[in-house]
Image (cartoon, rainbow, N blue to C red; front, top):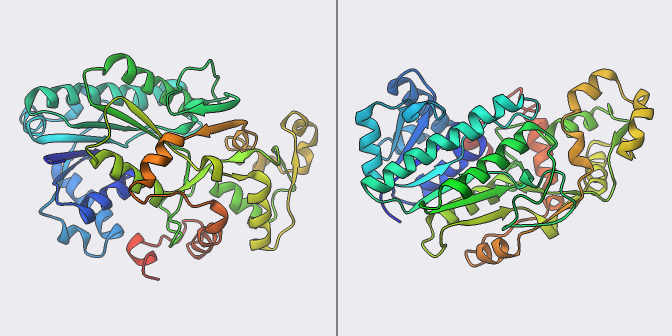
Length: 372
């Protein structure tokens, strides 16, 4: 692959790790679309991120990374006509990582960013294809477009009649449906991570959400019971596996267009029971009782009202019956030496980092975490 890369979401957890790989493993120039009032403000924001990620990163890669102020939901991405035309002529790869990942947003809010943003990115991709040629349009989605589907869900599946647990899942499903319906002329691929946690070697994370809140509550002994099925699969993957996979699949010329890749643990996924047992042992706390979700309401007195409210949005992921079949993705990534490590082998590193950083209240830069 050659030409300029356009990356969205570079200030987000997944996007920043993808940016690191482009800078450290290749020679391509990268333009990052950053929400800011001006290009100077965008540059300052991105430089701060780069220095957090890589020691002296802003200085080291100033010649290869560009920041432009923009808004992915705005017409023309909020870019000037001159900047838009320049980028369209130079960009050959688009990696769209940006999204609203909140689980408790309204459906309209989720659609504004996740569906509306995809629409604007596809418009720009079409222009880039017309101006200079486009080799790859890569969209980061989520494995949980599977929603409430029970049983096997493959890379080729999308609409299988499922419902959705939250607006995030539904808006990402609608974004994928838009790509399939409207982007047949583009060389697109869709990348679907499951639940993303920190680096399996250092434990570093920039986002203490989803699984981290329940783990933190368990560390304090707050939970005496949770609505869960003990053998329910918890499909959790490390950020380094996800970013390695995204970089490989975006940069490899061997992958044809119009494919979807499940970046999931799948057969290596932990169960709820295993995760709780390992975490309880780490924190030396009693294991909370797993109560079938249908019975949980009757036992809500076992959990404080505040804890119920704060963790309610995550509970549905403790009782999932979806099994992600990523055989094609697994085989493809194995060719590049990229493998998913079972959570049990690195959970202690995640918890070491979480407690050392006080669950994000005392931030530790990635550059420091990787050397400590």
